[in-house]
Picture 1 (cartoon, each protein chain N blue to C red):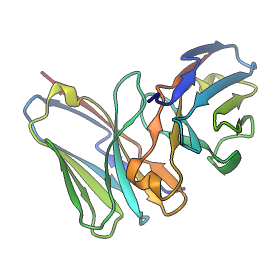
Picture 2 (picture 1 turned 120 degrees about the horizontal axis):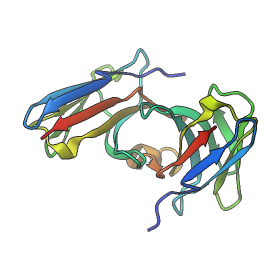
Picture 3 (picture 1 turned 120 degrees about the vertical axis):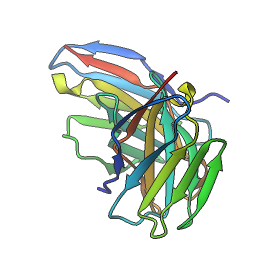
Picture 4 (picture 1 turned 180 degrees about the vertical axis):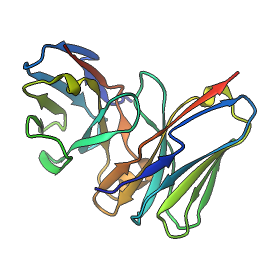
Length: 116
Length: 110
């Protein structure tokens, strides 16, 4: 079974540009989550999508946005990139509650975004 | 926002030593999970605890959920270099989502 796949693995952008990150969940998973991990410590919650709708949003500015497609894949867009946006962006997928309690989140390997 | 504090933030020990990592919150969680993340990879689920006071063992790893379901601990016996990684706890707010802790970076020196 294929795991959660993220693309690209690495992305280098210039300050002010836009970045688009993509995520394909495990087959059968309807929820997709996006996290930002800076400095290799702790996960900052960005967005949660389920069944094509945004269910929750973390404490990030509006220039961080995303969407979930009918096939449950998801896209994270970051506009007007700033240097401090440089981080590892992790996508995770899960079954719907309450099944996520038993099986947890399955994470992808992330996209390393570098803003120069 | 459900704040989960982990301690210590960094831990470096010799192979064969024992260690305990703590995860604390002022919030009650319906369940709590522990993940381990290795460099260049996403976190991987280790265990889920659901009942207050529950203890689960996974080989040399022992996980405990506090009686009030606000805190948890992870104890590793006879640590090995393969245990090196970032350990993350995540608490579930019923029907909502999991909130991740601040993380503990463990290095086991051969």
